Length: 152
Image (cartoon, rainbow, N blue to C red; front, side):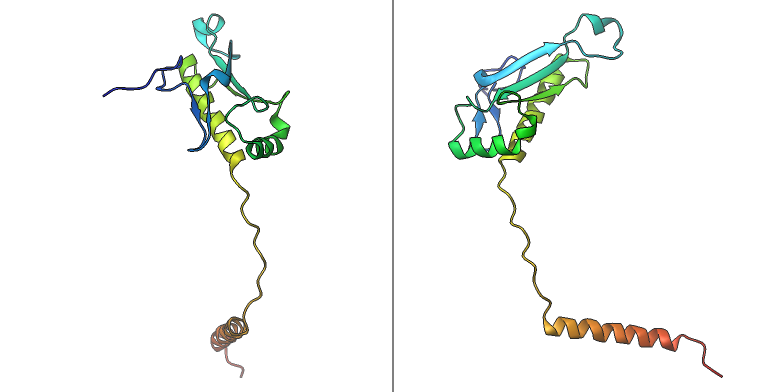
């Protein structure tokens, strides 16, 4: 069985698949590595395990104009100079943090790409359903009345 070219993070492709129709080329992903904060033992001061993954939406070649507008509108609060960035520093392994950052960025872009769901149009209950609801309430009230202590 043959596999495609492996990326720097060991995955089969360095491209980041967002949806079936949208893939971010690996050459347009910007990686930054730094030291994670917090406790970590002997390797904490020598290992750059914290990962930042960024993609510039303004220059992303695979986006259509409408996709770019939608992403920029929905991710406006997360954009810094047109780029969206995710950070991963959960594990002590840079490789696992790279995979986590890829998954996080793909999920973020995928959720921003989704079209909005239609808003619910309020409907009016039918006369029959209204009548049946009131009849069942009356029956239930009568059952409860029968449980009461009889008046002397």
